[in-house]
Image 1 (cartoon, protein in one colour):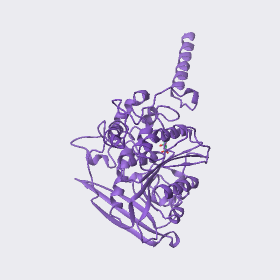
Image 2 (cartoon, protein in one colour; image 1 turned 120 degrees about the vertical axis):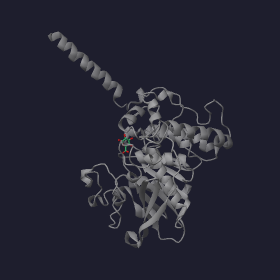
Image 3 (cartoon, rainbow, N blue to C red; image 1 turned 90 degrees about the horizontal axis):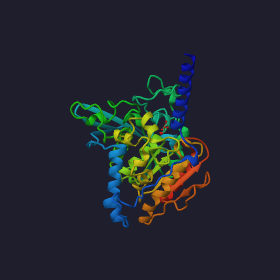
Length: 423
Ligand code: GTR
């Protein structure tokens, strides 16, 4: 009896060990699997792409289609802005330095209604201005201390130290993320900033009955089809609708909108820039798995892991590649290549190993041949740069000291790069 008991314990621990080895994230370069990265300039049929024309008519569309059908998911229909409202406006924001506007966009379809509010800070120019467009994680009122910023009523993940309980944003979180948004620096450099609380477009939870997706359900459909949009594509959809608005706003230069995002919202900014060519530039800050990092390296967060923790971010078809990266006929360098020839900036943080900084660098590097085809300079060195030593070409990359975050250092680089490549 006793020995059976020990055998059971032994087997239990053996299994645990096995499971542990298989499922712990890998950070060891020597354990990165050997893989062959697909060539962005070779079609799925193996034909070499030698001209911009072939890229634009054949290779780019087939790559975009692959990412759409198998990763981020297709937007099942069109929905334009039904109406927009200026909720609030001031010419005296940031101590007289800027114009502030809060614009509500409404979308109606059948009996559904969705609203989201764009908070904009603009330099006091008479000219149309270039703009950074971004989502925030905890509401527009977290990005500065200004009392007039409206607090969203949309669902939010609880975060007690920010005063977010019972899924409601509160006054207590006003300004708590000001450190990530050096608005005055942007204004001084001649840029506007437009932000949206991402939870207004699709709450970040595993619930497929809220947000924008249900607007397109047919009959008794309860969730997007296998090739239809997850939350990242839904958030990207919202950024494109903000772009629709900017095309009507006389204070904005809609040909110079740079879409920025951090982490899951960096995955979103990359997909927005890949799927909507109206964005003039794209910034991915610490976007990691499903963003700028190569999936086939399986360092830090992997496809299996992200699909397990966030099954609703990507389309259901993406689960086909969980623990099956070798079957993927694409990798994230090709997502970046879809942005070409427009400027793209990939940024990592030294302590953010979960996002695989090296995999982010390599994706920027291997996207570069497509930029070269356009006569643009991508990343031209094979080695990662030193920390805090940005490479700024049409494709830009830096790894800074510190953790998974958005810092002044990051924004100083983005502004400098935008001055050269976009403004
Ligand atoms: C993590 C997730 C990452 C990244 C991050 C974030 O939990 O594993 O892919 O998106 O969240 O958005 O902060």
